[in-house]
Image (cartoon, rainbow, N blue to C red; front, side, top):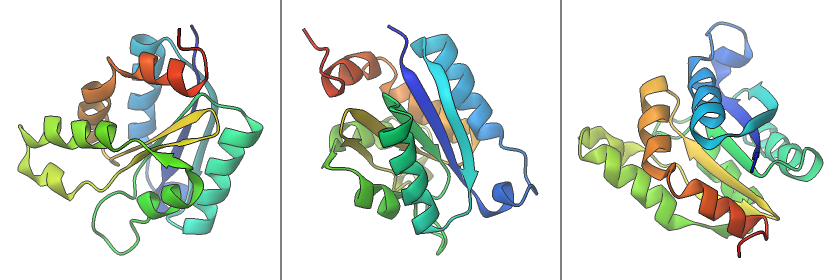
Length: 160
């Protein structure tokens, strides 16, 4: 199964072209190599709730992505609003996946408890918030990678 995947980066500096988006590159590699997915959309937006919400809605409702992976905006800084924006878009949360990411990474790095990302479902799309660093993306996505195919089968209505 080839999973249609969209990547959304929330970053003020990235949106202004002041920072290379290396976290999205890690996502792309993991999706293509580990999940067998295809990137159908990629976008960088500033840390603005309305822009994050609009991008998530477009990725789910227009591009019909099976999976949307966000990176950035998930810690404690005042401009980190990705989880709040995601909550306004999803219809149901999947707390176990977010908890698994935190638990896995906290074993190596106690600062992972500051990660506020969520996982949720909008229609037939799974949305996963990831940290804004390449290492954080890799560690968190690796924590749920083995369960993503089954979750995507369920969310997209293909579970047998």
